Image (cartoon, rainbow, N blue to C red):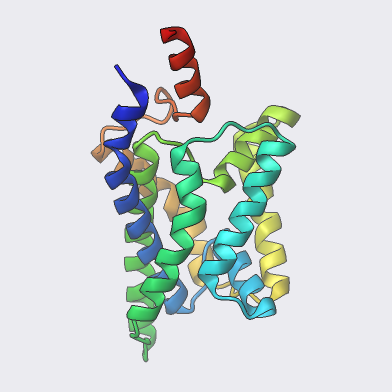
Length: 218
């Protein structure tokens, strides 16, 4: 089996996952009730710099990716690179086209909950393609390998730190932030079951895998 040829067939599903993820992010942002930790951070940087949310997502993703690869020696895949380069533009595109502004608290909660359901589906779908996790998840894995801190402890440490800096930069922290912290993990797990994907036994593809296969074939 040619790994690269097989993986290229999954890229459309990867991009569909990115699109759902981006739409969900825009909806939760538009709800104005608070975003997830990284969303609050990106929103805060956007407020301070005047750059769009999507551009901040791309730029910071590149920084995180560079740090993970150069310092932590994290291995990356096609999905990792496309995650950095594509999602920010999709977010800005949807944010531009979707002009609805909620006028009531009910509409805000509908946007928040709808965005959460859509966003977590997009995340589960793109991860289930097995083409490589996003740079922020890669950072977490890299820190786990370097410092030998369990993921269950490391993840909240990273997200709390990111959330704090985001809040200090001007990102909105609210009931939506709390809801996403509590609910998003459960929704992703539900979608994994629907997609027949087991994150415990499945492995994400890395560029090094293509190189190793080619070397073994020679």
